[in-house]
Each structure stands twice: as C-alpha cells, then as structure tokens.
Length: 212
Image (cartoon, rainbow, N blue to C red; front, top):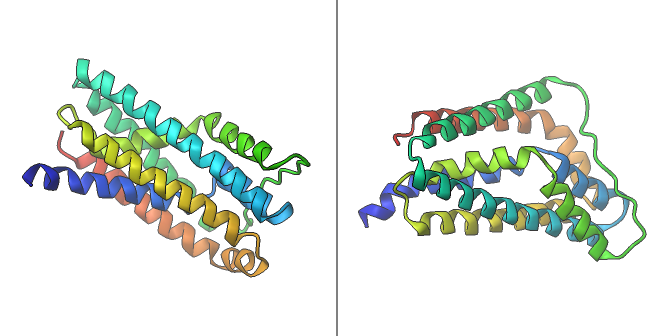
C-alpha cells in the first residue's frame, strides 16, 4: 500500500498537467475547433480521435524511451526533469502573454470533401508532426517515472492521459460545433489563460522540487 501512495501524487499531477493542457489551444485543438465550426461535428470528432490516437503513440514512445534511458543512466532523470519543468514554465509564460493580448484565438479550418477517415488521418498527422508533443510528454511522464519506478506506473499514466485526451478532444469537437459555446469561450478566454498560467507555474515548481 505504501508503494501505491508513494507514486500516487506524481500520477495525479501528471493527470492534472494533461487536463489543464487540454485548455491551452495548440495546433491540435485549434484544428479540432476550426473543423467543427466550419465543416461539422462528425468531421470534428473524427479529427479529434486522430489527434488522441497520436497522443497515445507519443505517450508510448516517450514512456519506452525514458524507461530505456533510465535503466542504463539513472542520473539522466535530473536532465529530463529540468527539460520538463522548463517546458511547463514556457507554457505558463505563453498563457500569461495570451491573457494580456487582446487578440482572439485563431482556429485552423480544414475544409476537405473526403470522408471521416481522411479527417482522422489528418488529426493523427497533426499530432505526430507536432514538435512540442514530445516536450509535453516528457513533462507529463517525468512526474511518475523515476529510476526505480515499477512498470505499472507508466501504464497507469498512459491509460489515464489517453482517456483524458479522447474525452477532451471529443468535447471540443462537440462543444465548438455550437455558436453559444464559441461566444462563451471568447468572453472567458483571458481568465482561462490566467488560470492555465498559474497551474503551469505550480506544476513546473513541483517537478523541479520533486525528490529523485
């Protein structure tokens, strides 16, 4: 029981980073929003599922990569944690800067006449070619993984974050196919960005101060 309680805080923070990150529009989320608004809900959902599948692949690649490196070089965990914390603080800076900007969000509209499978593949491609994805997953996995972390910790993090990704991106596709949701988000955008920046600062601090 003590083993579970030891890793539980890191797992929960990893989930928190993933959930809060879902409120920070990047190329993936903006593509889902733009497709739902300009094309339709079904196409937006197909794109969202493609993005979420890409998230799962990045999670698996990051997990296997970090596990392999840590098995041979446990001291590398220090560098990994600094990279993850630095990325979280960068996200905080971007969120605060966005909150201070009067500009509205700029969505990416994908106007394709093909079926839903095309949107799914496009969503998968968007996520897999996003260079920031690996930094995001390094930050997420760093909370739970350590040189002595058991195998189940990585599985729990990946299972939970994958569920969050699928639910979150699908919610964007459904919600932003309605005009009231779009208007409401635009009104609350600045307060949302401030909240995001605050959480990313906290998460970066926790990652830097977590004992190895």
